[in-house]
Length: 235
Image (cartoon, rainbow, N blue to C red; front, top):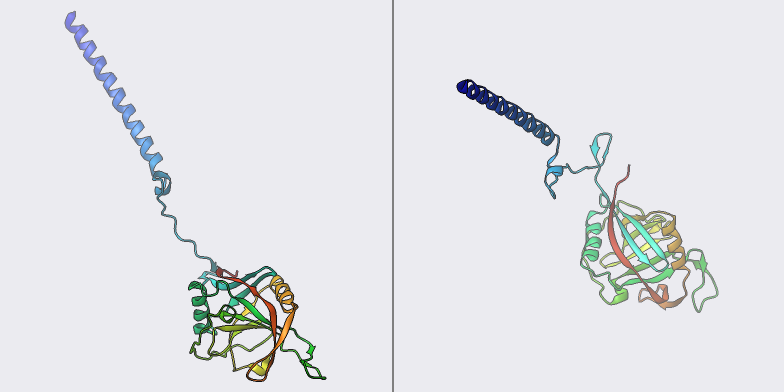
């Protein structure tokens, strides 16, 4: 009888062990299935294997466009850079931004469109219709020997680099008579930019005779700007 009780006890122990082993297998399987459904991003804090999402158009990756933003107290002027048309000029202008040379500089010449009269004359002439700025306003002007890039016309709303200098100007009207003389490197974007240009060119000026004989309209007080380069995608 004692031996039978021992066999029964051994059998029960083995049965309990089998149940425990089966339960352990079930638990391990569930944990494995759960873990397989987790990405490394979920399983490890700070780890990500998400691919970089590059915007596409009809299956082709888009290259970001670059914009130059002139922030002033009269509003921001946004310029879309045309690197495909004036690569070296765009690179140079961007280098002025990255080197911080534009800091503290601004616009200093404002020529309204329409008829104007120079001091000492009784007749009118057509205004030059431009807004000029650059490093001259803060005494950092550079003489830069860049190739002339003339794929773009001096049309209304373009911005061009004055040959051999670090100075640039916005054309407020078409200036096709200047085609081939300056490197056009960007175009004005958006109505807010135009409103800012109109405010700036309407500011008080004084007349100053350039050595070339040109009578210029110089702002009584330069308008300081802050310049940055931004990227965007067109869809």
